[in-house]
Length: 285
Image 1 (cartoon, helix red, strand yellow):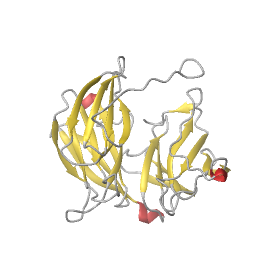
Image 2 (image 1 turned 30 degrees about the vertical axis):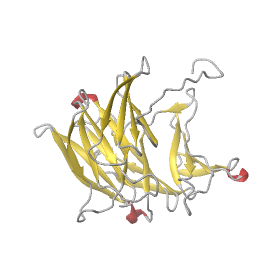
Image 3 (image 1 turned 90 degrees about the horizontal axis):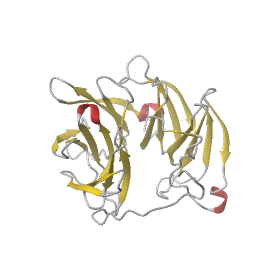
Image 4 (image 1 turned 180 degrees about the vertical axis):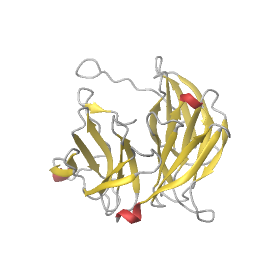
């Protein structure tokens, strides 16, 4: 992406069906790809694009993945069957990052099993010490945390947010600002963007404001200056969650300031959104 037009190279990943999240290690040497349709995680080398290993997941339907090299761990969610969004999982699996060895599963529900929570996305809070990962339960309507316990060499899980308390459902994507004192969350039904204060305790978010976007609020792109967020409103063409608009939010004002309807007006639904490198903030990812 150093020259325009960009040069595209295709990487063959034959073990992978229904490709989901691509995550890079903190040192930018390793990439991880979750395969929700074939129950695998493909691990590759960033410099060569070569596949290093293929990991069979102990739980089906891997989707979200987050890696923390400081504790030599990565986490993978067990979400839903890709063909019909059924058979929802309830756990995240813990792996040793250096070896790919599965170390155990953590249940993210207070309900009897099978709870059908469908944990979907995982994100480590940047710079948290001890490390804290956030997880969204798509069907359960909750956000959980997994806090690293150095003595036990494992994670302690706890419920952090009930999105029903926000008048919302179907929590999906999560982000942090560069100052690490704000946590952002999208919920798809109805479409909303939520901002939380995590300055006092990274694992105990306090709601600042909720803004209506449009049905299917999903991924968000943030500008490097921290001024604007662009919310992509569509989730798999699902009824009531596929508006197609892009909502523009002024983060300083905490207000919706515009809607980009270019794709919506053509009957198209954006599936994801990211700004070009000149403007894009990683927002904790």
